[in-house]
Length: 307
Ligand code: BDR
Ligand code: CA
Image (cartoon, rainbow, N blue to C red; front, side):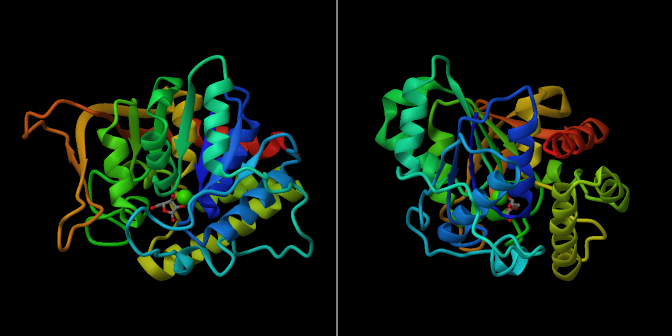
């Protein structure tokens, strides 16, 4: 799989899961603007790979703005660096790829002998660009699994989740493609709450990396408490990776999904037709249920395995 992300506290944990779990092979990491500028998100992705001791996976910079809209970053949620919490005195050792995200994605898809799954945990800008520039490569994509959207309400606007809101036109283009698509929205990621219990287990691992994860989660908890009054923060992005690792962890239903791009008050809303009111055919698998125990075991095992 490749992971297209905007680290981001939960993206960082998604990266660790994708790196460590033996069921998947991480072929490349591409970045997109979202939680912070793409410059900062790229440094953060390099940071996570450096902490995990991964030197052979390219980290390539992607879009620095949405397809048509003005950029809106989430520094209120993820802080000035995009990954606030622990402080680091040195630059990450993993370098940035000399190739752009687009070229790395094309290269991986062309060269890999079997179709590749793209997990996207930010706005879908890079993926929309890829699909429109390289239509012949769509058969080389096994599936796009996205953390984004919601069957319920939003988290950045009343009806829009942040990754959908940042670039609704990109999400719309991706959903109109023929590539199999799975949406892991807020309705399921809000089942992945980093409770004290979960934090305690991470702490018990006792490695420097586990300590850093606890600091990240503690920062993330503070913003979720301040902005939304959550007692424990939802760890959104690893849910999409977990779905690829073991589909049984994230239960899905088939449904038609469209993205609102025109609405005066509703841009970025994911309109998920769970009861087929519209009669439109299903174009997505929509995550609805999380096996919490299996999910947190995967996260803890990943952090422990990375030492
Ligand atoms: C999504 O938005 C970002 O802040 C998170 O990293 C996650 O991908 C949740 O709405
Ligand atoms: Ca993200």
